[in-house]
Length: 248
Image (cartoon, rainbow, N blue to C red):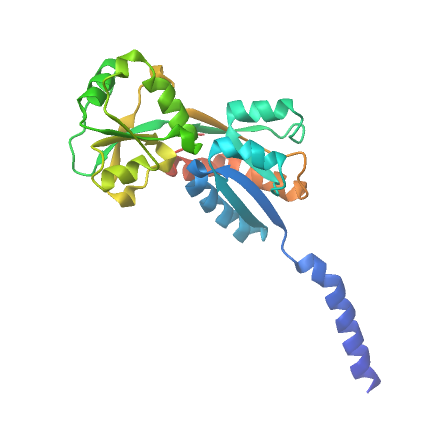
């Protein structure tokens, strides 16, 4: 009988000691919605390899700095590089953790099977845009970082006659028959909608977005956050990002 009680006691102590170690670590990530596909894919494999659970809050890039200043939990933050630099100047980031993530180009989209206009030069791109019966673009008022850079380009008088439609989801507007072509970040393109990219807007128009990743100063899981940062920026992650529309 004593042996039985002894074994039970030992087992109880073991469970008390092992319990905290066995519980999975968890990190909270603030990320632009534009990067959701790549982030989810990498988070799934990271969790499988490490046991660390990755919880996301996806939002428009313009909304994330306020979320970081507020009560939202954050162990990792991803933002357009210029916005990340502004946050860094306020000492809101863990020193030495700001890292380049990659670049997302803006795509010229059409419905699958529709003609692909030549957009290989600035002049040909402008002609294709002006010739389109309607052009869907993300409304920058929604907080879309892609919408902001496209809106900046469209302020050029050369595009004054373009038939622009401000929407939430340019690719979906094509799929639903509400627009002939669209301009949208490559990372947001969903082929399942029956749309395809003709190509990227010529570089002269500067419609790309560079993204950075960093640990917020308020992180409560900095070790796990740093491990995930290194995981998504390692060379082996480049192929996943490429398939999700971001070039490392």
